[in-house]
Image 1 (cartoon, rainbow, N blue to C red):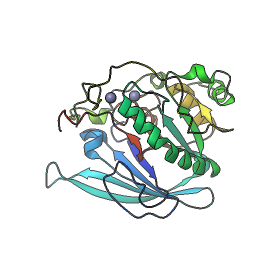
Image 2 (cartoon, rainbow, N blue to C red):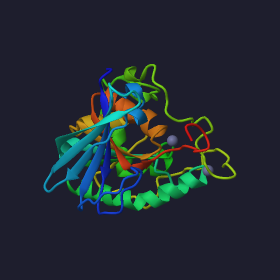
Image 3 (cartoon, helix red, strand yellow):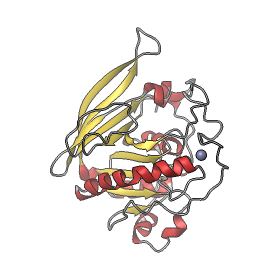
Image 4 (tube, rainbow, N blue to C red):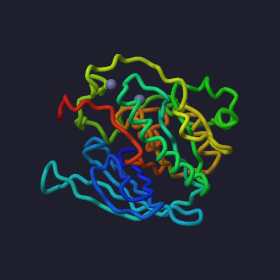
Length: 281
Ligand SMILES: [Zn+2]
Ligand SMILES: [Zn+2]
């Protein structure tokens, strides 16, 4: 599956709100930007990718995909490629990864808190258009044991789904030999002093609404089952952290790409665990 791709999505609402992209652009309301990562061969962040999309009226998402292709002429340089895609909203899901109420890193916790209201607005808009919303706060399922959204995920048939959807994915075929672009071996906390690691999360942050028709799960198999049941072919992943759970979770970018989904990462609704006092600085 070397040529499977994932994509990154950024739903922009109004000018001045763009995050994480290092660029300032004026975008009309409801414009969605997506970034696409194709052939992770050169590591996600190097191939980089960017897709830009517009959520338009009705039940269609028009996506202006933008991705970065390694340059053949100049090693280390990239070419930006844009293309436009149209996604039926009812064949699209958003997976919200690990937007926990608390992280062991106080900086990470603060950034999630900061990002969540914007994410909630995007999710609400998408839900209204018919997009399936999947809340995936890993290791917090107990908090939702009685929630109908949790039930929906548990009850979907997993018949004949590949068993690797139950597991983490540490690398696609296309990533073989690639160099990971950052040193995250210290866990990525950039606070001073560094935060002690642990597992303090108990639920998703409460500024992201869970509504009727949504699903809750942290299982790759359950999530794949719900997507299949709903006829979903396009997946938008948002949440944290790009370089860890978002890419590697059983329901993350790699597994969704391997499973054949047209998957994107919403690049202004994600965050990275990276301590800039580590390479590449
Ligand atoms: Zn920290
Ligand atoms: Zn994580």
